[in-house]
Image 1 (cartoon, rainbow, N blue to C red):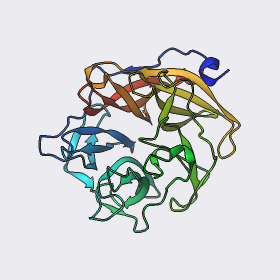
Image 2: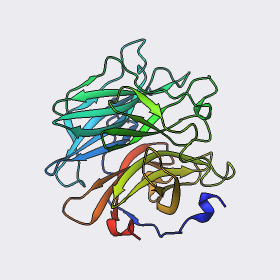
Image 3: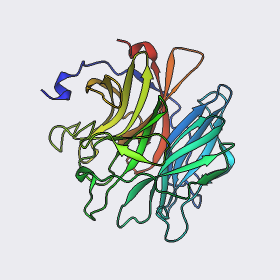
Length: 322
């Protein structure tokens, strides 16, 4: 039996907010007029910061910043745009998006995905750093990660490496990544000690494609790891080949990285709900609410008009312990 047949059939445990989406898209000529989504959120115990991806009407993608005092109500930062596309000829001249941000030893770090041309679709991962979380500097040696697997090679013979979830454990960084246009989309994992030199843990996908193209589960992407108790869980987007069926699923690793013995599918936790995400949901990002037993699950949603915005669902932590 496949993973989909062995699942535990848990009920949907994520409850979307009625006020979704959280962040409005920009005005017509703004850098985030088409998309305002695919965000990572950092809660330092006082303030919440949302680092999100935006897209303008010309197709360029960049990264911006918003603040909140409660994780629910958000205000865009006054300068807003914090990481721009590269200069002409650079590897990230067209896309800079999917920020994965965290604070470590007093400084801020970001892994992001870049692309230099919509025609070649050569997606790679870069590194940026900041002292205050607002002013960022890209690493001069970017890009730092570019896959070499056959399963993420696109029709232009370019590897597609879109990074999403990051796990920091025992001085090791684990980044979960997937192709973008190459189908089926599947999830791999890479490891690093310094965020500059990376190695791929497995030649195969840790979340592989299953079933037929028209079935939910044929594509898996944008996986986010979350440690709770003695387990590591993976929240990931799941769809068919045309994104006509879309959910966020939940997996649990058997053993721990880098030598996990397998992975168990627990069920689906979130689906499309409301006009703002009627077509697709993806990029789950989990944040612990320090004052209660709930998790904040931020996620991207796509409307039937192909507009991406950011939403929030709440998950009770005891649901993970079942």
